[in-house]
Image (cartoon, rainbow, N blue to C red; front, side):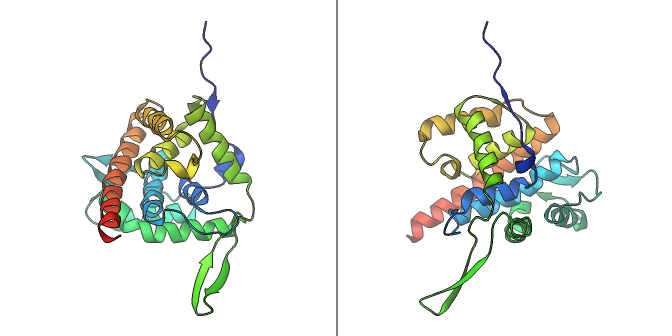
Length: 233
């Protein structure tokens, strides 16, 4: 008799970072601190904030409209700021609309939180001695290592994901950021596995509904990003 697949559960190290912070960690080069795919990562981090609020049963999505079901703060500054933004709007907004609204602040808050948690450090330099730039190299690699190990177990080895791992896979898949997590793996195999995880029944229906709405919105946003890049390049 075949044994059921092992379950990939988020470790305490990874749990110390939000899904948005985990996405940002995957995008940052460990040594140089440069960010890969920023145009795709920004909306993914914003979408991750919505997914976190859904996992915490703070929001729901009905007919693609984001609605608040519980305005109680979570104690995580970046997520509470996103929740406050949704609470403060008089009329519900669509998932895609909220991803656009939140993405600039979401990335800045995720980056600031990674610095505060000691996972990356900020370096300020000048290009050609004139133009100031900021880079965020790794300071503590334990969280990113735990995230990558969890993703490998689910996507490459077929382990059953917990809610947060499946949500992270869906966000990466929707934003077409497969290579951030699996740069050296077979692309077709990775995409097929991530699609399977995204479509599976791994959580409560309400949470899956929000994740699916975020994934669909990300796919639409990224399609525009890719088209714009091709046209202007």
